[in-house]
Image (cartoon, rainbow, N blue to C red; front, side, top):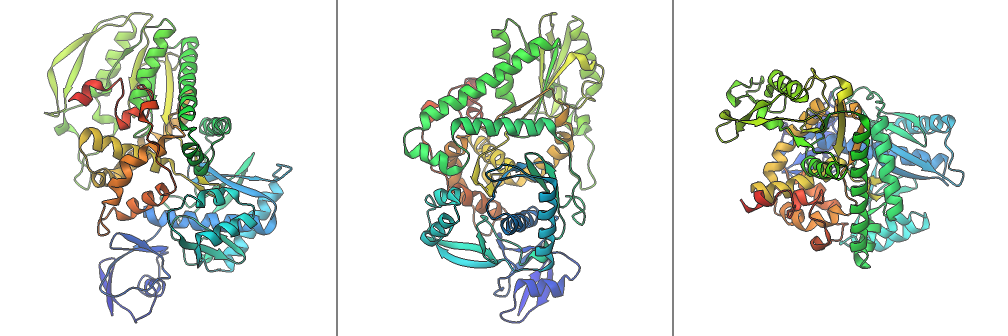
Length: 551
């Protein structure tokens, strides 16, 4: 029998697994799974013949996700074996790593504990234990997790729409990770643990060189923001999806939305007050795609006016150079997010003159012709007027290199999701932003979800190059995530995802998103969401976008 593996014809015997075929055909490649017809399959499965198969390694998104799931299992198994009375919560990503909290009645974690866990993880890897699929009914799974005291999983599984599924088992421990695993623990051989009280950082392989462990990045501002999000979740009594579902079903979601939105408003006003007392003049706002930068900038401007200030906005869009002047990459594409797509010298000249009270003729960029218009508009800023600048390069000093640091107030904004599916399965921040982006693109740009997915890898590369390296430059970080938002987004995005065919190159991504959305109840409560809410930027009805929505 024959299949096409990475574009090459490969012969195999009936009943032979993908693992055996890949090991023979790609002996020097660490393959973690395979992509067949848009669907991600485990290496333990057998091909039917005639398929086009792509091997998934650490250089692919799905391959990295398989590795992360498998590494989490190894970590959880090591903690279970050494400290059976301790619970673990996978909190959030931290650079190329996962921040995890290990708790018991003492709530203590020592360097010796972390060293012992890492040593046990290596023992598990060296034993090359199989991740065995274990078919189980929902009822039996609930009973298993209830016996183990894992009520987070018990409560979540009650919302699962299917009556049977598969857990993975290693030894006496079973887990569910909402996706396939590597065939065995022996493949999970690049990792490290670092104590970072009150938890640990589980470091994954480096994205560029997966044969080595990623470097631990110190991100204190980001850590503080996640800690604040966890505090908010505690106040709201909502840490996992089942908590949110319970409020939807019990009729408490409307009050929950009011409190969640009030927290956002308080945080934005606090930032306005920090700016007022800072003595700075220029507010620079940057963040990754679908963070709600524009709505945040508008709300911040209103709060500044409440404080007696008169902010003005200077649009970076007007400083784009003509599209034809943007250099081409080696692959023939144009990187439209690089800094030199902006006329940085002109922007700096204008900003310096505005700060000194001079009027300037600000250019206008015509997005239809993709050229700078011959028209300009006159702008003048008085001494008591802050200048708000929003754009992806806002935290990069090169953008405002001619303005002294003591005149700049930098804000980093991102949707830092701190709601988990359960204690061991986090909701990836990038997935939550992608849901926002798909809904917005469809609502306001008539862009189908597959088109948004096609752009997403490029968007993510741009964020890694132009945004994330500068996030710790910020004076403040604003978390634009709303704890309730996925329950609202679901009714918009779920039907779109279900329409993506199995043979689509984006089926795997759609299936993964659909899989975790299955656990959310929909909340049909748009009439409760304020017209200035961040989420309105994506679902519509924002007071800041009314003219655009009419068009």
